[in-house]
Image (cartoon, rainbow, N blue to C red):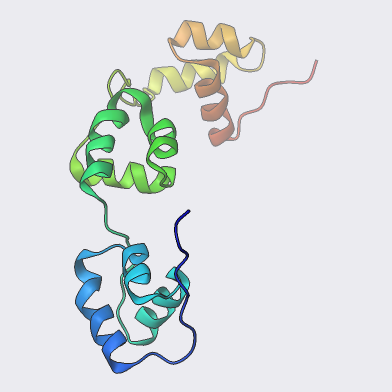
Length: 155
């Protein structure tokens, strides 16, 4: 069984603040907290109180490799679950690294003809029929109609 380190509470010494400033640029908050014997929240609060804005935590080499490996094929949700980061953080990191999803269809804008046909067919046709005719998913057709303020007629 490993020994639990006692967490220091109270005032920060000048040496602790100096060490905090020294470690912040290239160490994770959890590593700094361990080294100082403070909680991660205490390190965050002190960092903020001394005016160091450090919104993003550092990514380890292992995490970066996992983003490169997992994100293209499995997407942000599965990658985030396996890495232990939020979906937003994984998506942002993939974007910053230029890592893209494989097999994902690019967004196709609605043409004027498609919009006209949607307006014409929506009152009397099922969404699935309209979607098939337009070559889009029923969910995309519903979303577009909703965005345009179009509704189906009540029968």
